[in-house]
Every structure is written in C-alpha cells, then in structure tokens.
Image (cartoon, rainbow, N blue to C red; front, side, top):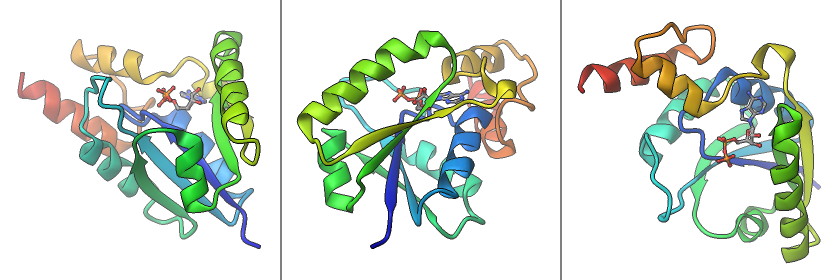
Length: 161
Ligand code: ADP
C-alpha cells in the first residue's frame, strides 16, 4: 500500500519554513499532497490560484509531491485522497496549544487519520507568512526567508500599490 500524507495550510505566502517541512516530510511518504486551504470565511492576501502557482513552482523537481487545494473539513478531504497522515509544522511552544487542539479535534472527527508534527529547522523558527508580508510591504529584505518565486510575487504585489 502506498503511504500518502497531506500537508495543509494557508501558505499565504509559502515561506522557507514551509518548504523545509515539505521537503523533509516528502522523504517519509510515497506521496505528499500539499493542500492549500480555501476558507470562504477567511480573507487571504494571495488568491488560492496564486498560492498554488507559487507552491507548484517550488516543488517542481519533486516527483512525489502534488499541490492541490481543499475547502471544508480537512479530515474529509484526507479521506477522499486516501491520506491517513496529516503533517503539521511546529515552531515554538506558542504553536503547540493551537496545533494540539486541532489534532485532537481532527482525530475526534476521523480516527483513521493521524497528525504528525515536524519540528522546524532552527533557521526558520521565527518565519511566519504574516511577518514576511509585513516586512515585504515595508520594503525589507526577505530573500533569505522565502523562495525566489515568492519574493517575486510579493514584490510585484507591493509595487502595484
Ligand atoms: P495555517 O493557517 O493552517 O496555520 P500556515 O500556512 O500558517 O497555515 O501554516 C501551515 C503549517 O506550517 C502549520 O502547521 C504551521 O505551524 C507550519 N509552519 C508555518 N511556518 C513554519 C515554519 N517557519 N517552520 C515550521 N513550520 C511552519
């Protein structure tokens, strides 16, 4: 049986922290599905199409990684793609409480799907999408925090404003 894992997130935009989790976790499974969340109740900076396009470029050379999007319950989506593992990343202790609740809720909703946490690399522990957006908006250097494609998208977006 092929092992399939799903790595869900907003990826608004994807950062080097996300990329590190994607690349490391793809080695542990036959297939990794990076699933971009599209929650109509949430306002995103980049559209789902833009977030998917950035991620597809980032994982282009990886044969076992696919990028898709999902709406609604993650555990239901996991079932439809045959994934029994959810990957989440952990940075600091501050991530833990939220991720812990989320994992317990997901298990409650579907006990066939388990959540596995990957510890961030120490270089990326302070990187989060919202902070990267803010630094980019103010014209700061983000080249060591996001992949080149994301830097390009951010520069383009902020030069239009
Ligand atoms: P969400 O809105 O679902 O939290 P994010 O795109 O912010 O989506 O994050 C997706 C996942 O990646 C989460 O599990 C988050 O903790 C993890 N993550 C975000 N940034 C990093 C990072 N720098 N290092 C490791 N994991 C990270």
